Length: 362
Image (cartoon, rainbow, N blue to C red; front, side, top):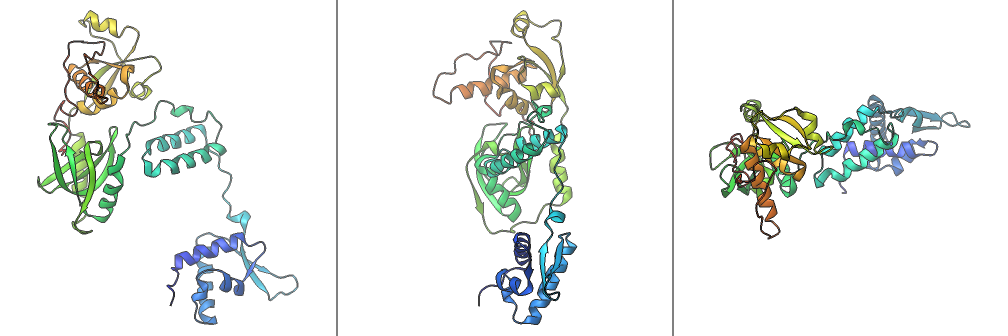
């Protein structure tokens, strides 16, 4: 016997049929043409099935109307009232559309980029106009895509299945294989992180997805470990905020690096600043930006290229220089001396080795 259609699918089929019928559909037409009702073994069974589905749709707020024939009062049909079923006109303010634009900018992974772009295009078509998202200009969150590691990790989190991957540690640069029970994927400070239990190290760790090298492999069966308790998850996430907050002084080119500018405050150079530093930032805007982890802010600053110079502190400048030197060698060329307009003799650090602040990281 053919497999029976799930009740939820049958309900959806009924809605589609009643929405698109040009006039009305009788019970006999529904039984004959709507997938799922042909499974009824008898007339009585079909009657119970249809009445139950009709009541369920009305409880959900779907206006199933009863239509009688002008010539035959006992000839009853059904349709969905299009006017009552349609949503009211969508009217978004500039601020509302701006907030949705920010949300769409946040989701830039390949798995959802197309959907968010289409949705935003449709919303703008009925919104407040082409300039309605100007309020969000420069405020888009700088969260890098999770890359190829994101989909398999998301599947593993949902299936509670262990994963194995090769990881480059931030503090030491060590590259080694990890066996992890994945708990949760979180977007923090410009990137995606996996929070989970490191089986080999017997403790909770966090892993930045951009430092995962190669393929993420699922290991063992689904349901291999219990889901973390709320207390465990909360403790893992709180570990991100235990460090003291510090401030950096950044020199920004005019009309550039708007995300840093928006969350910063105007700043001045200290009275004893070197003449070379004063000359380098003379035509720039100085802002003071709060941060907790040097490596996080360094990665963000390096992404702006020459639009941002680090005036203070020196360890942040070193970290940015290290990232830029490594980036300059990716094409096989000689990096040469890298300057930031601040201290040309500063030596750089390898990326991810600028401090040991990443909370209980891998």
